Length: 298
Image (cartoon, rainbow, N blue to C red):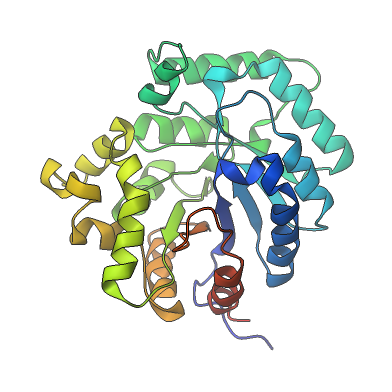
């Protein structure tokens, strides 16, 4: 009889940035994906990036594994046409039936507008894009084959109504509890949680702030944090210690498991763990090799 998971009934997945889809990373990422599957990873989420289409790298990853699911986390719908996305998913399904989850989202105004597009009425634009997707005859992307990036109450309710559930990013335990209340029982709640496997507080928080600084420049995230009482002074210089500790579990394997368990206890079904390595551009293979067995009780 195996030991009980420190995270209770929640499954453990992994999140990787869109750089993992780049050709120069592809061989290393497919090797890592096979290792993650062997370690018991439920699903590998990778950021959809700022290029249109479902990257061919997702097919390479699925081909390198046998059981582990793969998801886009997330595909920016502003730069994608529903018909083309549906066709991409159909091609993946023909080769790997039921193993790819289409994670969709409306990205962020600064990123969308930097590409020359107008970021206007994101909620209505999301509904319209889903309506277009649902209007496609064949190939269709059923609600159970897609998830929505969601933070606020309207988008969370849309995720519950029009997809398998929600994939929040850069959010606290308080948000996970709030999201579960809005979603209700049943819909998937799969928050991304970035972690630093480092026991030195100064080093851990420095790594966390380097990561956090770019997200604290995006209004969707700061507005969501304000919903839970955080203020402008908390966001300065990559975040104060209190904000770092609320967003990024750090420490040894036991400390990180405790931080993730808090999300599970708040209602998360799937914990999408992003390991922040100390060295830039390095795949955190060793860290996952240490962390996943501790999280899964294996």
